[in-house]
Length: 265
Image 1 (cartoon, helix red, strand yellow):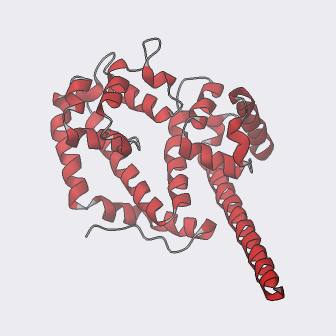
Image 2: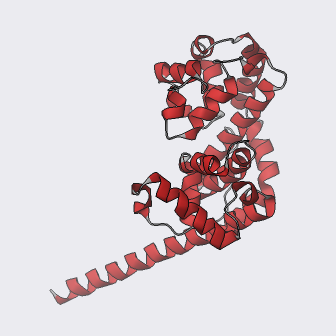
């Protein structure tokens, strides 16, 4: 049986414990035979892949490729993934650029089948395998505590988005198009569940204004700096804990009222 991440408790305290043991836990998790075999197969064979056809036709390679971007659920959507990969992101109207989920753009960019296939580039296989292992670990952690998966995803993906050469607004749209990152920001900023229903440009302004008030900057490159990123993560877990306590208290009150009503019948 493969190693399962150990999550001792929830909330900020649990997050700190996970952070203190994460190096040992990831090492143990990545040593699982199935992960090692998947990574070895990818490293040995990805250099022979020159097109979307080549990748989609090899399920073992595709599993690692999709898993590296948190898209494992699309493993059977071969036509869709083929279209995302083959069209890439440079052509006007390319499918990946139309999708609200920024992970598809990241996938298409990483493989570059619309321009120059990156699969033969030095270090490509190692990079994708490392992403695959980390995403797999995040998913395993999420099976124990979903909020911790969101925290790990934030630490991995926000710096990657911040490092892009695109404008600050474009980076924010990437965050807004990533379901896990969006969840962290919405919770940390105390935004209501209906927030996603308002105009997308208004959402952008709310995110930026709230970031400015909370952290003194709306620049995502600043928010991704280690110290500020840690503050953002802490704010997320503290607000999540408050939300859970409020939900628990509301449930307790409702149960008490129900029991009182029943005792009067």
